[in-house]
Length: 601
Ligand code: ASP
Ligand code: MG
Image (cartoon, rainbow, N blue to C red; front, side):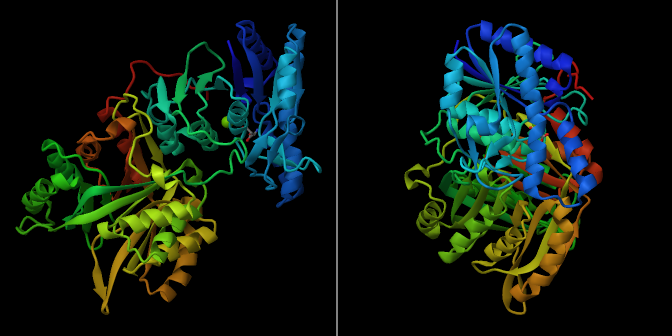
């Protein structure tokens, strides 16, 4: 008994029969004693059809008019669903975003929600009506009622925002799949349904989960503690619970426009071990990290940079107490990692015990290119040099000199308006979880490498700021360990990945901008893929990354880049190896199910 927000996606309301079936489900929920707000998408693929119509008239239609057009799709569904409910004797009323008072920023086709008025909703709920709200739309001001849309797939975001504003007991997202799966079932036929996942994991799995759940919806759920469930509107299966932590109280104003970063964290109990000039062949990372895991050493950050002349650099961090043992493993293991059997010295091993790791985290950095750049700029302005950089969808971590840590934290808290009392490292939910919840594959990435970047504060900042200004979102960023002296200047290489569609633009732009920064050439490789494991349970558990590397080694798959966050390990591999890699890793973590999950075509 309570207040429930339900959201039905396009296929769930794709025909008159489906709308009638949805009405039955709504009535069953109401009869169980719940008040209901129902958010719907446009029927089937009708939004795509509207986009197509617009393109037939104009190659580049005005974004305002596009919003006027696209927002009509949802209006068809709300009125039909309301009629279907009334026909079955259930009092109901349909409302557009404007009628509710879903107030957004004035950004047509990609507006974020400022706040939601709840008075009218409350009034209709008290009258015993089911309120059916058009998803995906809002208005930019209450005077002009300029219609805005939230971006494609945005009705999930409408639903969760309404649940947050109404402090609903739960938000149910109905879709055509039975919930969140451990991998993309089209590529991994034995992927299975998860019974639950945390919001943090869901965000790190963005590339896997985005098709099912809009990341902005997950962000709101996490920030406001909305309990969400993703399930099929075709069955009674309970689906996947998306668990959110107990939130810190925050105002309902600026609902979506809150800070892009909501945590700054540091860890001074870290030491860095780097191996330079390691052979570039399958199995190397697996052996090194396998041996570290054998000795029960918990590795935190792992970074492997691009190779030059057939060698890689691998760097990782461990706790200070583990540094000696880790160094011994790396040194003893060295000759096995050499390029040729004739080399007996092995790669050079460097250990630095005087480091700190600083991280920024936050769902708001997804799709906002400037956030990592802002971190680098802030640190550069404080004169702090970055050693290792490792990024994931919702996290950027850097190692810096330990003596710089206090200044770094103060500067970052100020730059991102984060309360400095909350900077200690703490996982957000103490739920028992499997070490790996799911495996994601991103085939739409390209890798860029910039050679010989002068090693001085501010250069990484400069490069990524310029890319952000071109609206290019950078995904994985890795700064190499090896330094090289180029005409007397110490330089390092920086490698990163971008969406494939941005690769050409990034290459052209950087090739022009880079000489003036004193960097070397820019190299691009589009035939790559990123495969990632995600799970809260890997926190503090040795051997998880090693197990992933081993699965790849068993299939003779070479790892080109490695980057980690606390709950994620990502490897870049050749595109040709991608699906084999995904399946091998999925199987290695015992994620395969007994029966096939049926996915509609
Ligand atoms: N109808 C909109 C779209 O297709 C919004 C949504 O379905 O979430 O993108
Ligand atoms: Mg959707």
